[in-house]
Image (cartoon, rainbow, N blue to C red; front, top):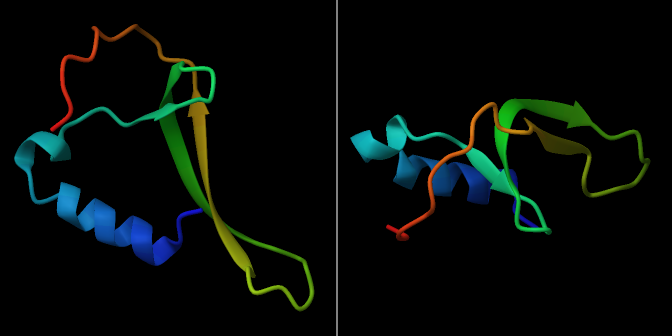
Length: 74
């Protein structure tokens, strides 16, 4: 599980690179498919007494066009 603090720290590091700032954002599904990130939302949980009172929801959809094969990890 990733917290909002961890997500911000990682995003801040990524955003230092101009290449990353223009990169397409995708989510890898458990079956190995890559889907495009479409929206992010902050939602409030209605569970009483829970430590997790809020959640960040990332929504995705099938890509409009297929990207080329991944050749490396930077």
